[in-house]
Image (cartoon, rainbow, N blue to C red; front, side):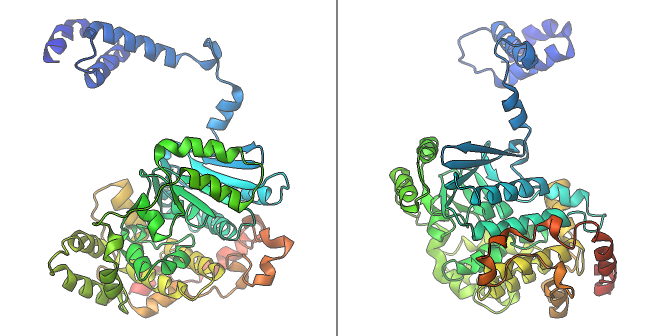
Length: 472
């Protein structure tokens, strides 16, 4: 390789900047045993790059305009026989969920539920990721504009309710990352299929937030105290663990996922037993590795059943000194680095969720999320995004900085219902309301937050305390 570089120096000196870029690329990717000379490899790569750069209208096989249009859509919607396919289509952005994504998904889910020719819905992601959750860059960039992300938050929670209560079978095909809000498009589905490449987590406490999008309902319904453990620590579950924990229904090897999709699209009805039978043909039995966290439930149940975050950490620390518990130390380290405010909000939210309905949990989560975005008691959310995503220094400066400085009366401000009922997330609360044909009412555009009522809503929120006044 060094010989090739020396020999090509004079050759490179007379090249354009684009030629030199291709030369650098050759040095980076040319296999040592490819069987051809460096010069031949350079010209082959140059020809390939030239072909790629030709506009589609001048190529021998121009790309159909429909494909070009679809590739610009954040969610691709397809109608295939009796099936409806929704594909998250932001692969270069980890299929983050923006307000537009949530709105598009909500529109299509409603459309398909009311469409007699649609029997079931499949959702998947393009690229190597199912979904990395909410678009954190969006929140950070709009942090200085009050309630700038309110619409996106409202639409996402409204969507989550209707996914949990959907009237037709829905199937998630999950390959790769399914994190935070992204996992909320997997876990509640009637059928959720994961591969060995899939992993799921709720890491919100590491950015000063809380497990939302229905996770205060789902986490406390996992075995034992696993929900508290996952919610507070943000630990990952991988592949078969996701199924064993109860956050997915089937495990299918990645090499079979495409064939499974094809078979599902050929089904002529939305019969759940038929769908289950097809998925079972491709799925394999679950065998959890001995080192899996799911085999540590006795310790998790003992430690994470304590009444407070402080007591949980103290108990977990005591367990770490015992023989065979080396796995605890890195988890404990991560737990101690999380936002103290977010940890206390998360534990309280999950504990309350044990006895709440999905509607009550989502309404509660909406209040919490909006109050966090408004920095009612802390600005940790934006500081967490800065440290993890923007500057990537991994050194957030939490405020308050320790658990003992986060008081119950501060948390009460975060959880307190809005004085005006119209400001709550508008989803059915009672079962009889859910059965009505109008269950899809309460959309953002019909809510009190939408224009022309927004001016009055903003006036109402200006009287709410900020973190500066609360922390004094």
